[in-house]
Amino acid sequence: MRALRVAFSIDSLKLGGAERVLLQWAQWCRDEGWSVLVITRHGPGRDAYPLPNGVQRCQEPGLPATLERLGWFAFPLRVWQLRRLLVRERCDLAVGVTTLPAVKLLLACAGLPLRTVVSERNYPPAKPPSLPWRCLRRLTYPWADLHLVQTRTTGKWLRQHCAVHRQRLLPNAVSWPLPDREPLLDPDDWLEPDQPLLLAAGTKARQKGFDRLMPVFADLAQADPRLHLAVLGLSPGLYQGQDQQACLREQLGPDSDLQRRLLLPGICGSMDRWYGRASVFVLPSRYEGFPNVLLEAMAAGCACIASDCLTGPADLICHGENGLLLPPSATTADWVAAIAGLLADPGRRRRLGEQAMQVRERYSADRLRRDCLEALRPIHHG
Image (cartoon, rainbow, N blue to C red; front, side, top):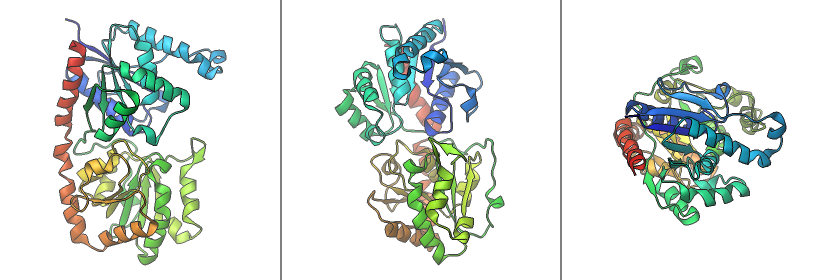
């Protein structure tokens, strides 16, 4: 009997939570004995993660340069090429991850004898695509055999706005201990062992609200000349036309001592060392799907403070028990007071961190692997 052939479709394997989750699902399917294919629009040059052993990789066929310049008018050709690829690879089940790849996948699969699954990775209204994509999402999302949603709030929105009723809740899993990967960065190379450290992490500065941290850090650093802030994950150079690192330094101001204590190591593959070194982990996000960095920081036993944005942090943190949540309207003074209170109270930091580690069991990879496979298996046999 031929093994189930599962295809996962995403734009690229660049650094990000959606990409990591997709590869974890692909590995779980491979371990189940299924034949797994990862389809990306962009090639390996953008990859930040290695492909699991035994998982096949395929790049969508490109268009001639003359057609690429047509933009939207070339979109039907891309859909047709993806359709041909799925037929050629004899796929039984196709999973589209993030909005645009999911819409394209559903269009490509229309009328084919294979099942489809969609997974949004952010709260949809927090990062709306352009109007044509929103229309196509509303048209195609009901076609999927199943939607894997990270939070109940996202599921409710999809029901109300996209008529999506076939859903299953599947939050992100945390693997413990966290594996290292290149590049390995040691916090001891960046600051002295006895210096307190605020830690933040993410690849998208505006989404994660790192600009909100600059005045907070400036106030806190004036009170404690040893305090450092490390923001991990921001690549040097341009991201969507903006130098994120340079923007943060500009927002912090000209004080050379503050600039010295703002650490921007870039992409880091040794996050466990930084979580273990942090005095407080901060996540002032404007919006989230299901924040992997917060989940990891809690699993590492960090005392965490997060913005209670529409989805994500409140699914992980019970305020005052395993971390702190600040309302989206919290001011700089509110953030300063909350962080300063934790920095001044090692006992409270320890208690919050100990309770936070319970996410290791609640979101264990073994438990969520079982949920993921139980969701996909009946879709195929249905």
